[in-house]
Structure formats: C-alpha cells, structure tokens
Length: 484
Image: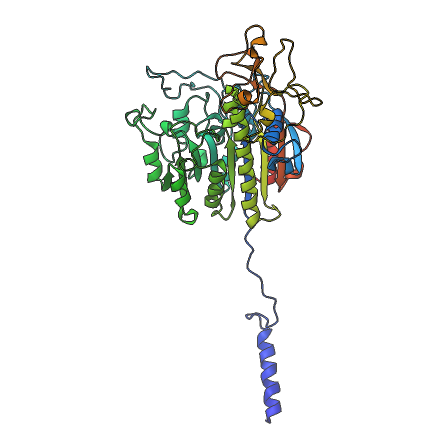
C-alpha cells in the first residue's frame, strides 16, 4: 500500500472511531462550565424619625436650598403610611417591624403577630429590666427579611448608631412583646446561647453599634443580671470583636468570619459630638460591614440605621438632628459607591432609603433663603428674616422667632415672648439650643408625628416602589425584588 493509501485508511479509521457509540464525536461542542449566579444584595437604610421636614431642613443645613443630598438623587420614590396596629402615631418598634415582616403590630412590640400585647417589663431595684415576661400565649413570631435571607444562605448584617438592641435594629433579628427587654434582645443574637433566635441559622455575620451594657454582666458594669458575658460568648463563636475605630479599621474582612462591634455602653455619640479617633462614623461602619458580608457569594442583606436623628428630635436640639441626618446621607453615598465597584449598574443590588416615622419639626414663617449653615451663617437654624427687607420678623409679642420649631417639646415660653426680643442667630444656631414648641412637654419628650414618610430606591426592583403605600407593602416589594 502506498503512502497516500495509508493516509486515507488512517483517516477512515479515525472517522469511524469518532462516530462510535462509546466515544465523544471529535466535532462535538464543548459544554461551558455553569456560570455562578451573581450575588443578590439588599441594603435597607432607615433614618429613624427622618420626616419630610427634617429632610428638607437637613438639605438646607448641608447644601443650601438648591442643593441635593444623596437621598435626593435616587430615581424611584414613594410615600409610606406609618400608623401601627393600635395607634395613629407609631413608635419605632412596630414601624420597623412592619418593614421587616409585612405585619402590623401594636406599639412597642418587636416583630410579632398583631395580637401580641406589649407587656411593660419589670425592673429590679437598680432599674435593670428583668427577663422576658411577655407571657406564654402572647402572640407568635413574625418572620423577618433578614431571617429569610439567612435561610437562603445569604449573609446578614445590622449597623446602627443606637444600641444594637434598640427597637429598629432589634426588629430585624429578634421577636419580643416589648422593646425595652434589651437583655433578651441581645441574647437573641448569640448563636447557641439561651434565648438565641434559631431562625438566624448560624447567626448574624455583622452587628455594629452601641449598647455593650446589655452584653455584659452587672459585676462588670453592664446590665445583665444573669451573669452572662455575651461578648465572650460571641468570641467563642468565631466573632471578631471591636470597640473603637482603630480596631474596626484593622479588621481584615477577608479573614473575618463574624464581626461584632460595640463602641459605647449605650447609644453612640451624636455626630456633632463624636470623637472620630474613638467612634467610627456611620459611613465607616457601613462600608466595613459591606466588605465582610461581600465574602458570601450568594449575597447579603444589610440594614443600616441612622438612629440618633430621632433622639435629637425628641430633645428638640435641631442642629444635632440635622447633623446626624447628614451623617446618615454620607453613609448612603459611601454604600452606593462601594456597591457600584462590583455592580456598576446595580443590576443585582437593591438600595432602599426610608424612615419609620416623622416628628413634629416645622419650618416657620416666610424666611428669606439662608443657604447652608457655616460657622459664619446659622442658615436654617437661625431666626426668620424677612425675604424683602432682611430684618428679623417679629411675632405679636414683638419678639423674633426661629425658622425651626416643634409642635411639642420642652421649650415653651410661659406667657408673652416679649422678653425674648434679643433672640438671634447666635442663640438659635448653637449646638445645644432647644427650639421652641407650641405644646409644652417634659425634657426629651417631644413626640413622633403621624405624617407619611418619604422612600427612595435604586437598583434591582427599585421601579416597583411608587405611589403612596403602607409600610407593610415595603416588606413585600423588598422580598420580591430580592427573591427572598
């Protein structure tokens, strides 16, 4: 057989072999390996007490009347009704719980069924709240978005400027009849311990904020009468623990399985008073949390609360409230920037920003435009100046009055205001000034308001947030967008 015949015979044999039943055809297409599903992330921002007027005042305070905060730039918007199961004006517990569970519940109740009665905690001689006294048949737990995320294998985190056991963060990971049972709420976060919320699976991946007193025993200066040190217990569950900004910055997210940060005994400082060398900003906590949570290839659910906006409003110290609102907005800005690094068009990331309720803050008079607040300009914190003449406007008693006021609060003049004829920007613009109120209340006891609140959203599924919706509807929209 010549060389040509040999080549033809070899080719025929190869073709026959390639078509045999026990061999893959030589020209068969190669099946590509499966592509891993993109992680699905939800970042839920909650400005506690961040009503529409507070947002407007914070915008003027920070960037002037014609400026924009980050929250102003989010493309999808809605208004949210906030009433609770038993009250026209909600407190934070049932309102945040409605967002997290889709269930209306009574004031002071945390993520429970509508029939749950808020039972006031019993305190010991030192004022420490004793254990869970809700009663054996007092409602049932309502599943939260965070728990649904954990059930699907996602990571989950909670970041706040309040105690991590306060009403808003508590509504994401615990179930209890009264928000003041903070020792029990803290215990719900410790995997395997007594009182642990087993619906969290392996547990929260990140928990950052204040409130170490509810994690430590009385003998160590805490408020736990059961003698438990929950920080020690969390460390035993492979949690890295940090207590200041230096320790937080030193955390290597890639090597951190679980992160617990408790930076103060009670609430963290107002941003106006915060020492940046000791306490991290809300933006710093948020981005560090995102770094730790992003290790999970399936995605994460992160709740971020600007909680001290609410506290300053209760005090009627408007400057503190507005500065905390700006710090909250900075956290939104930082989170969006970080999210867009890996998901530039936010195709797999939903960001929602809203409030649990508003307050009684109002903007008075026909004030001329003030521009943003600076060291030399009180801005929206100043007294009302006539938009034509620039002179301070006067009330019927002949006294100036501030642009910002409250419907109720501790600073109400008894009788004529004529003695306040010298009121000026240097007084009303100070860090600790308590704006005047119409109805007099005890110190720190200004109330929430019942007005609808604003919601803004961007990213995956954000277009479904529209119109005027109930706070329970927000739950179902987030759930659907995230596929939970």
